[in-house]
Image: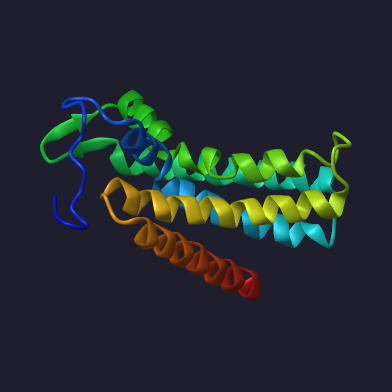
Length: 177
């Protein structure tokens, strides 16, 4: 196998664990959900306790998920390429397609919840939640390259670039809001 070539799937017809993780959790919606929740948590940090920030962030993530389900349903419902898409099918597809808006924010929200549970103080919980987003973005970038069979240093670089671009997007969102 040449350097940088993708590893063959060890079980044809089945996704390897790495590919399953990648295809189920590395989605544009999960990446956007991770960036979004980081911005929401960052904005809440100076204004609210971790408990209030958790509630606001979780509700905001849910509303964005709901908006995405709504938009996807409306866009998919009807006749597409000569095939009728019933409303129930459009809703099912929208929910499946939009899951990342809920999974992306999950780890930061769980870490933020450690303050109301008394495990961390508010400041530490906010910091852990924000840093977890950067770790998640790093892992998503590294995982994308690992799946393609790249060398460890390329995966490391890809993860650093992904989290770096994530930080840039988060900063731009914070400046504009």
